[in-house]
Each structure stands twice: as structure tokens, then as C-alpha cells.
Image 1 (cartoon, rainbow, N blue to C red):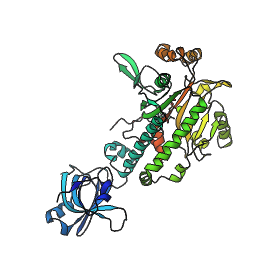
Image 2: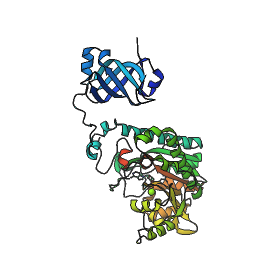
Image 3: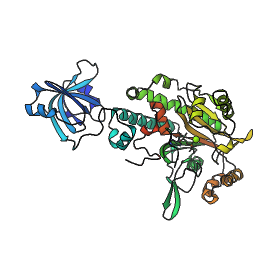
Image 4: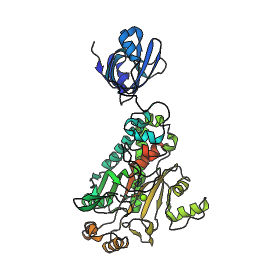
Length: 434
Ligand code: 4AD
Ligand code: MG
């Protein structure tokens, strides 16, 4: 009788048939004539029951000594679990160790400290919780692509090495590019502005870098950002796009990652509320709200830190869009509000439940002279921005876009306290390894 090789996730289709699972030993317990091996294979975990009467004495003895995370192949007959309806297990007839571990696996079911787990991130990824996060992350990224692809955007990849400081000079990683200084990109936006003038609706999705000196639960040195940019779109259109986009992503995760959200003990009732329309308030209104709610010192001109963002967003059960910040707080490229030129036509989207800013964007300055003056005002090197100014020389149009940080979105949707678990191998102020 030859057994077919199947994945744990497929077991329900092979009841009463012989199959082989290939994976790693997640956990093991014994009771007299039975050994229970919990085997994980990436698609899930399955209980494999070794009954003394079914296998040779050697195999039965060996099954009692397999160490956690040894790789193995288990053959047996699929059956429904005695007590758990809809759960399938294997009655083992044969078992082969592919590779026994060479030393004791460092991550045991007991509690470990964060630093220890971070040092062992390459192994920590094997745990059920991390697996669930990885799958939600994948689902979010797929939804991001499906959303823009479905709206006829063209994916235009932005470069990683760049001469341009898009988001200010204080968080740049500088590298030596064949004797010339080059920066790791902080944002693909400037390139997407070129792309929008070429294809109308463009987006990029890739890693971006910030030499953040801040050690917070929201900051990474390397994070993934998706950045749409649209020609002939204004700030209102931008806010609408951001709103539709977030509602779409959350809906997709709710539809297709219920099991993972359950593993993460996420309160999905809160996610169900993430539907259009989102509340929109001005920066001015946000300041007034802060003054009345525990931050009497708040005044126009202040930037919002994590605490302020939490207070502002806690009034709402879904993401809130805050628009028109003082120009001085923002990067050089924003268009001024024609109603009040001290304000930028920008917007930030703050996630609920204290997760803070997940989207930043707005309408871009499309006037050549105003943009040139802004570049000078921000003390940016004009030569490096000549190509960007060309976009205003050759058929400039109103345009807008935004950037969504994937990791902060994963943290929010999964309900995680810190961004470090949202990316497979986080890069932070004090962490470059593994
Ligand atoms: O607000 P930011 O800096 O906006 C931009 O970079 C624009 N150029 C985007 C655009 O308009 N095309 O960053 C956008 C988002 C933030 O809202 C946040 O979600 C994420 O990127 N982000 C970070 N995520 C993790 N760690 C950091 N250090 C982050 N900095 C920004
Ligand atoms: Mg921002």
C-alpha cells in the first residue's frame, strides 16, 4: 500500500486513506500504549497517534524519544479526531526521522523574554502565533495589490538607492555608491509622481528605510510601504482613495484569515466596523479636541506623537483622517491650501485602538516656482531635484497620493502591541540580526 504525500491542511479529503505527512515535531506527549506526536508542516499541525499495537516495538520505542523540531515523515491512516469534530489526525503505521535535531531546540513551550525570542527570530517564526501573523501579512499584501490592480493602476517599481531625501534629511541612511553618496530610499513617492505623469495611476510597493533614532513600538529602520500616486487627483480624491483602500483590506482579511485572527485572539468585532465613510477632521479640530481632552498645552504648530494620536483616534470606532496640517510640520512637496497658505493639503490616517498613523499623503505642489522655493527653504540640494522639477516643467497637473506602512497596518489588524512581530526579520535601532 503506497501512501500519498499530503499537507496537513488537506487531511479532511483523505479520511480512511493512507497518507504521508512531512514536517517537524512541534510537541509530543505519551500515555502508556500511545504516543501523541504533534506534527507541523507549514500548512497546519496535526496529531499523529502511535499505538503500540500498530507498529514494531523498535518504532514505538523510538517515537518516545524524538526531540522537538526534528524533521520527519509520518505515514498512517487519516481519521476524524475522537472528540474534536472537523479535526483530522493520523493513526500512525510508519515513521521516518529525516533529521534529528543536533541539540535541544531553544524555544520551548515555556515563556521566553522578548530579547531572547528576537535573537532566535529565525526559529521563532516556526511558532503558531508567528505563522498566523505571517499569513495575515501575506493576505494584506495580496489585498493591496488586488485593490490597485483592480482599479487599473500600473505597478511601477521605485529604486532603493537614490540621491533624494524625500522625507527630510534627519532619517537618511547614507551609503557609498561608487564614491558618490547615495541614500537608501525613505519613500518611492517622487518616482511615483514621475510615473503618474506617465501612466496616470501608478503605485509602488517595496522596502523603505528610515534611520529613526526613536525606539518606539511603531518604528522600524526598514519597513514596507505601498504608495499610490494619481494624476488629476486632489486631496479629496486622495482621502476617498485611502478610505476605500483600507476598508477593502480589512474586509479581505476578515473574509480569508478568520482562523489566524482567532489564533491571535483578535477582537474581530472591532475590525467589522472599519467601513466607509471614515470621519474626517482638520488638524485645527484635532488640536482643539486635544486641548479639551487631557492635553491643555496642545497648540497649533505641534506635531502629534503617539499619545496625541491615541487620544484623537479614541473618539472613533474606525480610522480617522486628519487633514491640513501646518505646512511647517510637513515635507517640502505638499501643495499649499489656497484658502490658507500656512496649511498643507495633506492628510494622515490614524488607525483606531491606539495604533496611530498608518497612512500619510496628500496633494503635491505642482507649481514650478513654489516647489523650487520650497526646496531652497528646506535646504535640500537643488541639483539632486532637477529631474523632479522637470515634472513641473513638462505638463504639470494636480496630483496626489499616499503611503501606507505595511507593518503598522499588520500590527493594527492583528492587534499586536509592537511592530517588531509584524515583519519576518525586523530592523530596529538596536537590531540588525538575525
Ligand atoms: O508619513 P510618511 O513618512 O509618508 C511618506 O513617506 C510619503 N512620502 C508617502 C507618500 O505620500 N507616497 O510614511 C508613510 C507611512 C506612515 O504613515 C507609516 O505607516 C509608515 O509609512 N512609516 C513607518 N512604519 C514603520 N516604521 C517607520 N519608521 C515608519 N515611518 C513611516
Ligand atoms: Mg507621516
